[in-house]
Amino acid sequence: MAYRSTWLGLALAVLATWRMTHLLVHEDGPWNVITRLRRRAGDGFWGQLMDCFYCASLWISAIAALTVARSWWEWALYWLAISGAACILERSGRKEI
Image 1 (cartoon, rainbow, N blue to C red):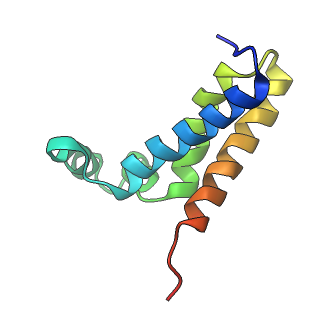
Image 2: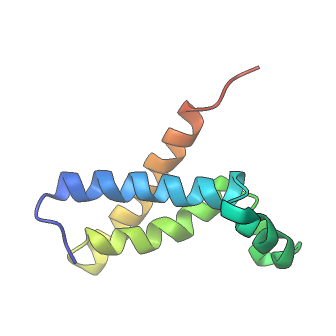
């Protein structure tokens, strides 16, 4: 489902990607659901994916890009742009010590 306003769709996709990625990588989730999922994933591919914001944002943004892209080449551009923007948001919220 493509949004009528590409800018609005892109902004929503970026925010949704950041939120879902932050939940999976940095939070316990409601009733510790994400913590249990992380434990169950172990040290394999899925466990490592849940430890790295940048890696997880690539997979989540691939799905989010489907909401704004109208062709496969647009999807590829939006995929990387959404992930990049989510990573910028993540870095901007960090406290440097």
